[in-house]
Amino acid sequence: MHVAVVSLARLIVITLLSCLAGWGTRVSRRKQARRDEYITSHPELPPEIKSAIKSGRLRIGMTKEQVLASWGPPGNTSTANDQIRETWIYQRFLARGRRSFCAYLYFEKDRLLYWKSVE
Image (cartoon, rainbow, N blue to C red; front, top):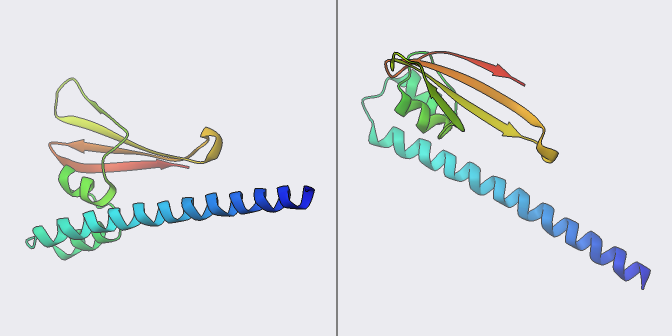
């Protein structure tokens, strides 16, 4: 009886881990599909911007639209009183709610000025 319970628990854990691993792969595929679709629909993009979007990286001077194509939507945004400057905040969490990654992207007039990452 005890062996059957332990075996069942192991099977459940393995199944859950497999599902989670598959979910991460689907998310990655969706991200890559979004990036590829954007690049295909914008043939006028400079090669360095295309390369950055395709690999999920940022480049100074990217538009907000290009950053969305590369990284997806931010978790939070804030706009300065002058309505010209905007900050986007990206956060990724580990298990138990611990933050593993946080990035602050700073835009002015629709262009990425700089960003800071905190891990």
